[in-house]
Image 1: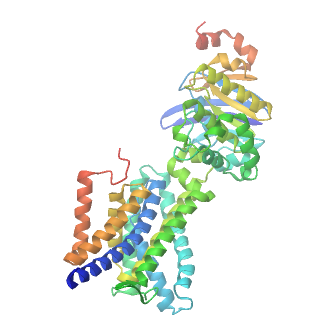
Image 2: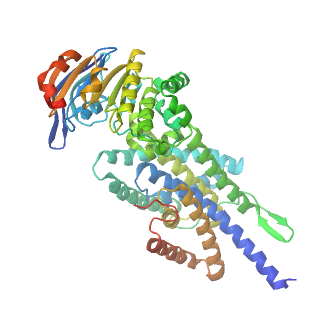
Image 3: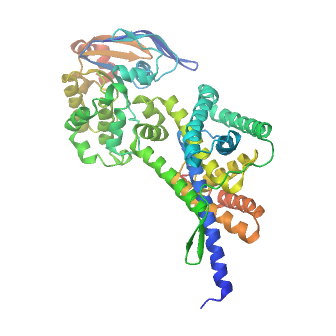
Length: 300
Length: 234
């Protein structure tokens, strides 16, 4: 038989595993959104992380700023998700689309979204202050299986992110707009020839990715708090996941997200949370040296 | 049905089309001949809204279409079928065909058009679940034409349909185009070779160095000595 210490250790490892999987699932959701925009428009959105806090802040405004708590998170999602879509769509139309007519626009989009990221971080600081805001857990309590204890929150975050990814995947393969998005990603000229309105698809893609990262923001803010700077950290993580998984590969992004979620959880448990970001950079550097195209990237 | 007048196109510094005027009547098959790189494709692309800065007047069914977005041109019933096919490689044949019916004008006719193109190209029926990237050159060409037909267009701009095909397949694709025309579609087709064209064309234009150098019906074209010289080396 195992000694009592070994059993305790096993429980603890299970805890870390669950935490890693739930965080990893949200990373997966966000990485899919990021990969989507890159795959379709071939431009990189540096303000992606700041839409993460935006989701969290919108939820906070609704629940505590206005104090509308009827329906809990169901109401939050019903209100905030369409709002994120509108914000994403409008920003793409107003800021990104005009650049697309110019030469070398991919780089200009990067600079512009980098500026947008700085602007949003400052805006959040002015409006909400530097102190952290927190959201209540989506569901309190724990599930006990024998002597193992799972928090409902972790389980629900996992289920909701995976659900979000599945809904997204279904849309991509079964709806007219989803097929059009895939068509533009696979062959922009072919898409134009058959009469797919590319501009509208670009804006919709951007907006959908904004919804995904905003959704991730609502889910993770319950575990981590929201502050004006968290967008930067999320951006770094989403980027590491995307690069590690392989630029433009959705499947690679999914694997990478879980590996990174688990890596973070275990490094945090063994050495302390501040080491987890160091572990990410080591992973990123190792990826760039050993397999620059990422886990499932196609390379050049 | 289609009128192009005094079309000028520049790619950066180079002047690709010089005052090109072309007209195609309803139900015709008009063939544009000419050496490679002399502007034939550019003309088709300009008509379908795929070229920026095309200067001149292009009218389709009496409507000015120069400068409007490609999706609106497709919606009016004009479709470009590309010489390099421009398929969606990681989608199945069926998905490629369905995307061909993306425009508003085509959506309601998707089912009947699908039945029609499967009838025209029986090989696509067998291949419908296969990825476009795994098709042979000839099959991919058929798929490109079929995807174009799915748009429910009345007017087809077909860019070098025989490019890279062996003679028997060339013959097959030309006879299918003839069949499509007999079913009511108007065709403007770009080609480099005379022999196959003779069996297909109602009228012929020749483009050299971005200018129309000849215009006439099939018999005039076949008996024109200059043309025989440049295309057949006779």
